[in-house]
Image (tube, rainbow, N blue to C red; front, top):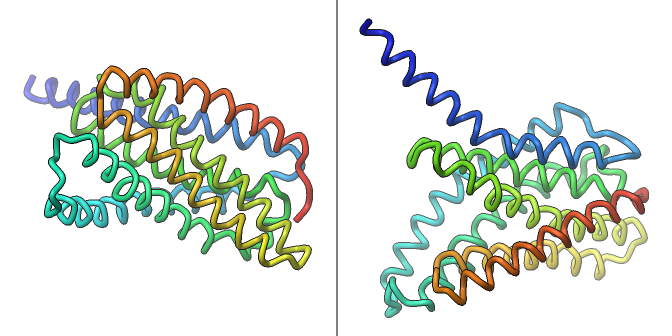
Length: 242
């Protein structure tokens, strides 16, 4: 009888972790299937998921330091200004930066990166590795009740930022192939900056939490998801060698 409560506790933990991981896995499969010309090696994709988790650990450390620095400023933690700075400069800049650095280091010179859409696949797998890691932490801390909301918002949100990043990186790789390093550099910069802007706006609305902010958030998320899934279909259909 002593082991029965322990068994159910482990079972609940197992359901919680499964609920945390499942949305990321579903979206990975969706993007993988959209890679219509040449599938990427399983070992590379698994490695990118691990790098996404590593990006999560790195982000926790840097964000902790960034939050302490922000708390030394004159901004009130209850003010919209504090939320905006936190969302854009502490959370979005750090998380997208960690993803970008690890993604580019692992894939930019990889011989498997030979089609434009590959960049979207790589970026999404890193980002969803990050999101899955983050989701597990949230579920373990707050319980399985947070899983449905995060499945609808946070996980697809991370995928959306990654699709934007990957789209620009694919174009950057194409420009590099043509010897246009200036355009390649500009697109690499856009890959990071636009991911940060989208991520920052997403988080800022939630952190501010006012009625107006939540209305903006709902409109933004609906528009973002529609735009991202259309972009994925378009980039998949028009894929080209790099």
